[in-house]
Length: 343
Ligand code: SF4
Ligand code: SF4
Image (tube, rainbow, N blue to C red; front, side, top):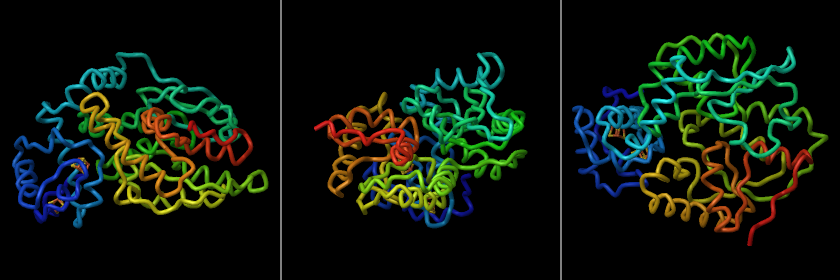
């Protein structure tokens, strides 16, 4: 959450931003405008990648200020394009649209939350995998993480509907495993910031997969590959969960070579720009894939259905497979084969 008292107007957040070319004076001027509640150019140029939270040395949470101002001013392209989507979400959350879906599983197993994604947003066969056998599945706008709506100008949705979504998940009566980072962030980070109650136990997908692989080591065939990782933007709120991913990579026998665009310096997958600035989106994808190829990766790993969908085009163009994290585990467990390079 934005904390003006922590901002020393150093300008680091916008000087380091990959998507604008501001010197320090310009960066500071932009932040000052936003702090005064005024429009600023960064609102239109921001891809909502959340990286500036990591760049900020004081923990002031500048991306939260930017997202709130994008929604307030309402004129930047992602907000204009996102408006109908947000209206549909509000309708579902207020009970005016189709309810979410709950597919019951074994009584003693936890539930898997898909956020608001549909089954077809995940790789084929994901929910038939032994990874998720017997789990109850919940999906639909009623169970939406809300956190990801910042990419379309919906920064206020967490505050308005966060407790409602958490209560809805609590009504499932099970521990929740979040397959999408944003759902986990609502329970683990935003609930604390906004004082929401989380009356259930929950787990991040990476921790769940790490535990599953540890418990089924004898079924794993180590893959002996190199992979690049495309961090989902919401992982900026939970950097400590990267360690689970490293354990997953170790367990399935893949190496994560150093590359330019990862960890602090990771690039946005470009999804928020596809409908507003396609040229920039394609340019970001190109830099990302060329960097992954240069570091010797055999594939690029995604952990968000949006990143995964966006990467299908550059994956084919650059001949570098993109593999969803659950599929990487399924390959190591013998459920799938390593994808062919397309060139
Ligand atoms: S959220 Fe990303 S694109 Fe937006 S200002 Fe921060 S670093 Fe730049
Ligand atoms: S938000 Fe952080 S990085 Fe940005 S100007 Fe303030 S203190 Fe510096």
